[in-house]
Image (cartoon, rainbow, N blue to C red; front, side, top):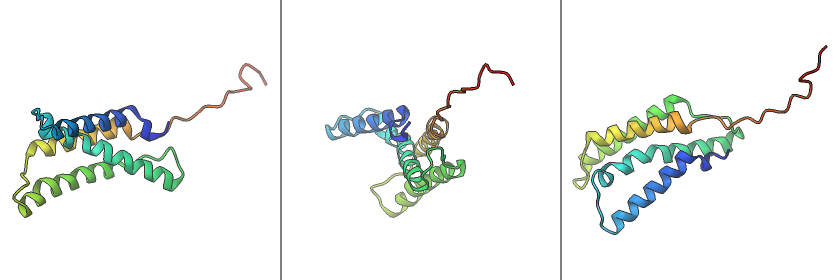
Length: 130
């Protein structure tokens, strides 16, 4: 299956778009407004990276190493929750966003980051004896 058609990825994209649409209409629902984008960020970003890697390596069975997932969650946490709030007053640090990145990384790791299903050829010799 094409990784970009993976149901958890598609659900993440749809939920992200719906949340952004609500924000554009100035409808803010807590905790969706404050944490949903952070939760969905890593499943979306890491799936796009995985899709690019599979094209680059020409290998539909390629999966991202767990260290990539963990490193990405740490990097997003450091940049968006530590660095940006120090550099720009409009950003605030929130430990719940760090937790959301962690949960998003786990969603990617356990439900999306899997090799493409292998098609097993029919065993034409089944039922025959030697």
